[in-house]
Length: 594
Figure 1 (cartoon, rainbow, N blue to C red):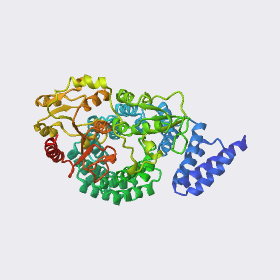
Figure 2 (spheres, rainbow, N blue to C red; figure 1 turned 30 degrees about the vertical axis):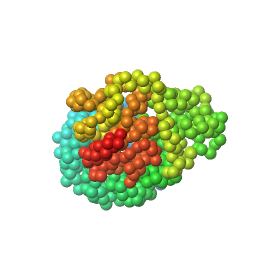
Figure 3 (cartoon, rainbow, N blue to C red; figure 1 turned 45 degrees about the vertical axis):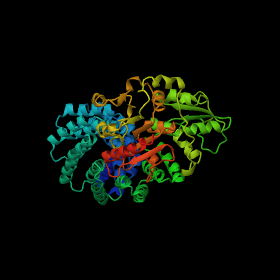
C-alpha cells in the first residue's frame, strides 16, 4: 500500500512538473516528462490530455488529436477534454468527428452556448446548413446577446441563399457589437448576394475602418466591385489583399478572374499559376485555367485541364461506376457506351453531336438526358437509347461524361464536329405549331432575352425585356420563344401587335424546335435556345456579354460550333442597348434582301 502511494505521489510530481514546463513554454521538456509518466502510468488521463496540448503547441496536430482521444477514452466525463478534442478535429477539417465531439460535450453541458455555436460551424462545414441554423438558434435562445452566434447564423443563411435573412442576422450582431468587423464583412457578403452593391461596399469599407489589415474585407470588397463591373477598382482591391496575405491563393485566383473579365488572359493565367504554386491541389484554379485556354482555342491543353471540373469544389460531370471510363484509347466498336449528361440544357445540346459520332464508330450508345430534351433527342436519332438524367443503365462496357468526349476524341479547333443540322423535330409536330403561328407574309423572327436565373452568371448574360423592345419597330412577326414569362413581361409583350407569345403551349424543347423550324431568324442571349437554333442549322444571332462564355471564344463574330450563328458582343461592360442597336441596324439591312 505504501509503495502504491509513493508511486502515485511520484506521478503527481511528474505531472505537475510537466504542467509547469508547458505553462512556461518549455515544451520539449514537458513532452519528455509526460512520456516518462505515461510509460509507468498508461491510464493517466490527465497525462494524455496534457500530452495532446503539448503536441499541438509543437505543431504535431494529428498526434495531439490521438493523445486527447486517448484521454477521452479513459475519462469521457470531463467536458474540457471533449471541447478541446472537438476544436482540434475542426481545425483539421475532420468535421464529422468534431460534430460527434460537440454532441458529447452538449450532453455533458446542455447549456454550453459555445458548444452550440461550434456545433453549428461543424454542421455548416458539412453542408448541413438547416441544422447549423438550428444549432445557432439554440445558442441564441440560451444567450440572446451572443454576437458570434448571430454572425455565424448569418453566414449559414447566406449559404442557403437566404440573403435578406442573412442581412438581418448581421444587423443583430452589429447592434450587439458595433465594432464587430467580421459582422460588417458578412453583411457586405449578403448584400452582394442581393446585388445591392453600393451598400455592400459601404459595409466592407466599415470593416476596413475597424480593421485596416483585414485582407478578406479587401478581397470581398473587390469581388463586389468586379460584380458591379468596376474592374480597375477591383484589381486595386485584390492587390491590397495580396499585399496583406501574399501566401493566400484566393487573392491570386480572384485577381486572375478579374483579369479574365478584362480579356487580359495571359496575365490571368500567370495569377492562376501562382495560386497553384501556393495550393497545388485546388482544382478550381485548374478549371479556371481550362476556361481561358478553351476561350483562346488552345483545345489540347484546354480539354485536359477541363477535367478538373470533376474534382473541383462544386464538381460536375463526376459520376463514377464500376465499369471503366472511356478515354478514346479503348476500342469501342460493338461495345456499349453510357454517356452521362452534365451541366445545363445548352451544354447538352451543344455536345449531343458527339453522341452521333460514337454511333458512327460502331458503339451502342446509351445517353442520360434531362427530361425537357428527351422528346427532341428521341426524334433526332432513334438508335440512341435515352435514360433519365440520374439513371444508371443495367449493363454497359464503358462510360464517359458528355463534355469529356471532345478530349477523348482529340477535338482541335479545326476538327469541331460541324455536321449541321444534327437536331430536328417530327413533321407532325411542325404542322401542329404551323397552325398557331401568324400566316406567312412577313419575316418570322424568334427572340429570347433571358436564361435560367439559377445559373450563377445569369446576371451577365440575361437582359431586361425592355432592352429588346426597340427591335419590335421592325416590320416582322416577332415570336416569343420563352416558355414562361413574368406577369410584367407578359403585359409588356401584349403592348406590341407584332409579337406572338406561344409559351402557354410549349411543353418541352421538341415544341421549341418545331417553332424554330418555321422561323427565318432567332435572336437570343446566350441560352439553350441559341444552341438549339444552331444545332438545327437555323440562322441565329446571339447577344453576348463583354467577356462571354468560353465556347464563343474571343475576337470572333462567328463560331466554329454553329456555322449559321452570328455573334454580337458588348463593346463595353453592360452596354446591352448598344448591342441591340447594332442588331437592329443589321436586321434592317438583312430584311432588305429577305
